[in-house]
Image (cartoon, each protein chain N blue to C red):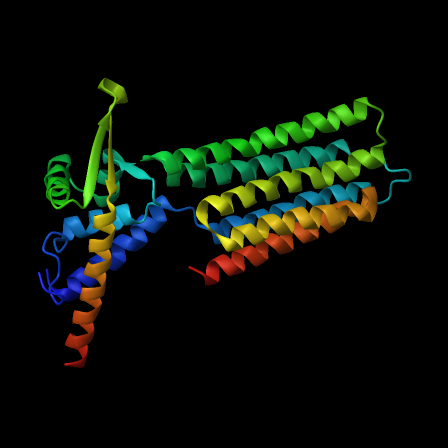
Length: 102
Length: 198
């Protein structure tokens, strides 16, 4: 991936929404799977698929705790994920600017 | 997905995340400024003609209690929405901080009862009752500012503590007016700064 290319892992509507939502959390915070699903508006199956892609790229972590009714899956953006989203935003702005001036 | 779509999704997702996961400080600060002005103002109106000072009337205390409880309920609803589903060490720190506020206020009111029990005059109780809750609130804001690296909140906390301490010199009648106005000015200034910094 060159400096002028958008990260293909993030450049998918659902994954962009996930990354942006998790980036709104402070360092040391995570979000439950169910709340993330509620904010993004995806089905559980779709959300799992996209989270897996982001996890494979090292951009998010998912941690399961508890069992039964008290089970909770915590999703958080990693440092690499935050950097990747910042880079994505910078490249996107640059591409939009050059498209506008061209 | 083309560039315009990506830009629109980015903007919309950022707005949604801020709305869902962050407490919007400007309206909360505006509301609490109003609470200080109305609650302290109501007590000041009920004590201003008293010679000697005897403390707020039951009606004024009842009005203030209902008014403050309603404001606390609204604040709790705002906070609850922002913290639902949020976990991790930073979220636990924040919850402990929220819990510290009622604990601090309970200590203030117990100490007020103890002072009265020890024979403190109504004048001393008046000065204490007007300023001690403000100092506790200021301390909570200072702690919150340290966690969030937020200079506006740090300034608000420091202002509340300083304003409470200086207002105490106004005496048991006027302390309610002085502290109420100073509290409102502090919250509204913080609201303006938080609004500008968004």
